Image (tube, rainbow, N blue to C red):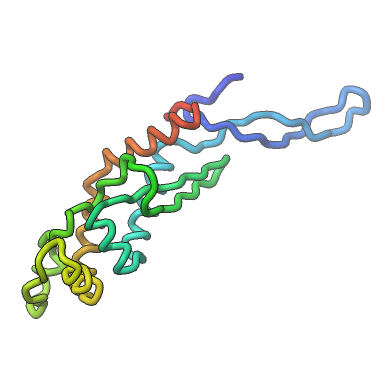
Length: 174
C-alpha cells in the first residue's frame, strides 16, 4: 500500500471503476488516505481544552487546580476529528495542566479589576478553602484565566499527548 506523504491515516472510500464484462461503472472499495495530520489533531485538542475551561463547573475547576487530572479522548476518521476532554482517568501528558495544589496564582482576572477583592482565602488544604472557591465567582474566573494560559503555554504537553495517541494507533504523523 502506498501512503501519501501528507497523511498517515487510512480511510475506506467507494470509488467507481469500469466492469470488465459489462463496461458499466461499478463501486470498487479502495483505500485512500485523508488529509488528517498531527497539526489538525493538535489544533482540535487545543480548541477542546479551551472550550472545556470556558464551560467547566466550579467543582471541576477546583479538582483540576487541586490535583490536575485532565485527559482527552480523540476520535478521528477520514475528515473529522472529535476530541472530548475528560477529568480523571489514567495519568498522561495532560494530567498536570492547571495543577496548582489549590494555590491561587495571580492572573489578570485579579489584577485587571480595580474593584476585585476576594479578601483572605481560608487556609490552603482546608475544606473551607474549597467551599470558598466554589462560592467565589472571582476565584473561578481567575482559575479559568490561569487554565486558559496553561493550555496556551503547554503546547509541548499537548503535542506529546497527540504523539502518544498516534503511536497507540500504530500510525505515523506528518
